[in-house]
Image (cartoon, rainbow, N blue to C red):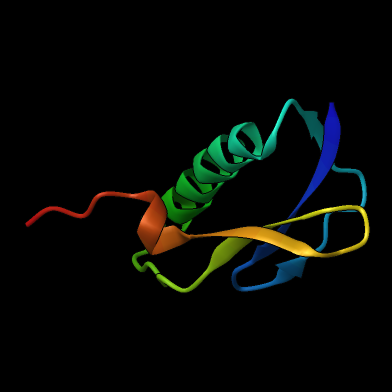
Length: 78
């Protein structure tokens, strides 16, 4: 298991100092998508959505491994 850190960049920048262990990056990305959807839902309840807000997955050295933008985590339909 490898530890991944999930930094949130929305109205505030929140740096994850604890991280979570996942079997691989794919599992960490799935977790980040769920988190991005939840955070996006919170902003929609406030009446807006800022698509470039994101959850960044980094390793213990702070190297960016993947980024999940709020507007990419949801399917917006007409």
